[in-house]
Structure formats: C-alpha cells, structure tokens
Image (cartoon, rainbow, N blue to C red; front, side):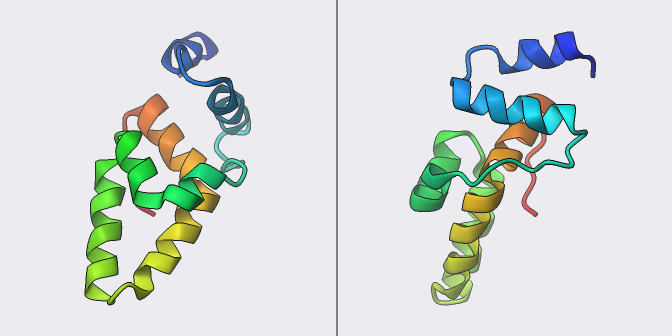
Length: 98
C-alpha cells in the first residue's frame, strides 16, 4: 500500500488515531501504538463501538469460560494493543485477535 492509499483510509478519523496510524504505517508496523486509555477503561464496549466484533467476541468467551479472570488479560490487551488492532481493521480491513 502506498502513502496515498493509506491517507485515503484514515480520512475522517480523529486526529489522535491518524497520528498513531501514521506512526504504525511509517515504521512498517514495528511500532504498535501508544497505550489507549479509552480502550483500557471500556474494553469490549470500545472494541464493539469501533467495529472490532471478533476480538470482542473472543474477549467475552474468554471471560465467561475463565469466570472473569481472562477479562483482566483483555483489559491490558485493549490498552496496550488497542490502537494496533484498530489500525489493522481500519487500514487493512483485518480483524485480529492476538
């Protein structure tokens, strides 16, 4: 994907996401994004609002089958990788879980 195609995919996003997505794109995905407090605090609700249904479904199933213990992992996961999973969905159209 070239720079022009990339810029067309991030048009209309909030500036904080555009900035994060540019950093991810320019580093060939070596940079995975900064900590996302909204994703950390709201977890599954944040992911569903962003259209990330697959990772939301996996998080719910893990939380149910581990009696909530697995939810702690996903809170941290959404915080540390929220920008990256949203980038993969928004730019590449892929739903990633891990």
